[in-house]
Length: 235
Image (cartoon, rainbow, N blue to C red; front, side, top):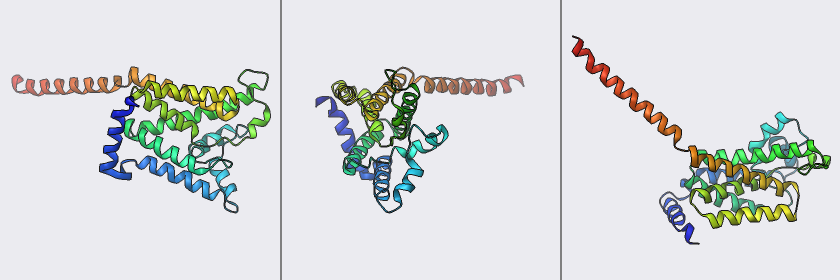
């Protein structure tokens, strides 16, 4: 698609000059997904993975918050891990190049956390509410990188003005949630909304504080120069 032409060129150049070292965050995330996938299939490994990174809505909030960062890298037991590995490396890698390492982490964790909190809220509301869930959903394993992948894809599309691609991702997630109204599908929609808010705030306020800080620095430099110039004059 033509709207991805400049992005493709940028990513290709970064990878050509730096190789895998150009995307250390994506490489580390992919390795973590692989490690958790291997460990949870070993004897006794599922118990270790559960204690480290498995989140459920029925867990105490503090436990869920502690496990959420690692829950992003714990793949589903019933899905092929290679799909998660490819998604994480490609999307995290592109996001790391386009958005930067820090913003990529912020978006990934914020949108994963939003999904986790949404699940808890849904269980609290109960099945009689439009966005509520039956109590048994609180014991469903709520892990995986899919919410972060979807959110990062949307943020990259907005940053690159790839509206058709971003719209396709949003539409596919909404259709998924409508046809398969399960926890994962609804969490993907929540991740999209959270990513949209983050992207919109960056568009509006992204350069506000850097400009403020630059102005303060310039004003301080001018004041310092004037004070130094005034010292000989006073003599």
